[in-house]
Length: 493
Image (cartoon, rainbow, N blue to C red):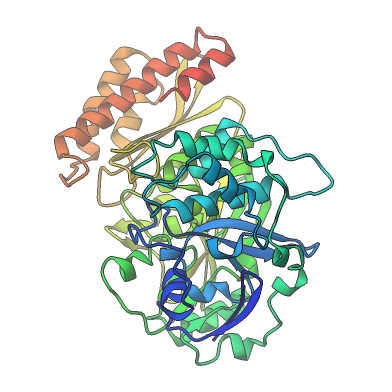
């Protein structure tokens, strides 16, 4: 059973372990305002807002794709849908602005757009005692990047977003009274881990005990990949283990490794959205990639640990982590161990995880002085699309020579993989055209890519070589440009 608040009203629902929030809304609760478009988290028509009470009791919302969010993750949460935004006869500013700016035509995608605007509005007005946070073009693009619309050309929707503050601050009455009621009621470990089909352990010990009892049960965090098995392949799960409430997997902790490297252990269930401020401060190229990785709805739910454990050859973050020399902290019934990420990926969708083990955390090293990182992703769509090829490159320049060169690619092999032959060609060499020519030729030793719908083998080989040439040009540019010009050049495309 699932207990949560739907637009301020308590709900007590039964659902199978593979039920999505969208399915629960439309088929069990009769709330049909939320639409199904793509059933894969791409179009945003099914966007809803999920709220959780913070330490001060205030409910903070994030947008999510209802089609790929497990319904049981609503336990103890607040769910807001397009039906619950008006305050009596007065529309919420997100709704009123969409009406006045003619932001809807066929209307199918409109509920999802309204919910993205709702979460944007609530985020801007989170503190009633302060002026609204400024709505920059970047924030607007991030908030609406996961909502597709065939009809309007987006200009009226953008106008609506920019004009929301022109309307009365009419939040729904239920939201103003919805504080501590959103907090999940305490439950015992027995109840959380009983014979129910959807298990939500709250500690690492409980999680590992559940993994020992039911090693066949799939693990879910954000569901942004696993739930496609349900919506696209019509899979059915008899039992699911949810790790989003495991306290040890939700932390970001500073640490120093045995080899002296400083950095952070990023818990396996930390979402991209929560990780983004840390990356923006220390690894802007990595933070920039997140906006190519997926929409706000995806980043609000997807986790770094899930992207690594999924072991997809076109996962976006593993090449970057390989280039940075990241390590994994694994926990299982036989204890805990550390493993270099280089040794984790064995073959297509195969990893070094032992039976019952989970990724407790991923080590992100602190940037060293003089060390550089560049990340470039090639995909058919610029936003919210899967990689055809992704290159991540780390290096430092010492006395005019390249040192500690690490080049990693996605989409070029059965796993995310370093280009060790190309690294060798560059190590200890000046960043010259001749050195990079040798590195490009060495890629043939590193990779024999396949052809698929995202690109032919020839395209991938050529693209990887061209990314290395781009890297050479950026290095040459950095040697002559001002810091501002370097930044503009590095993120231009």
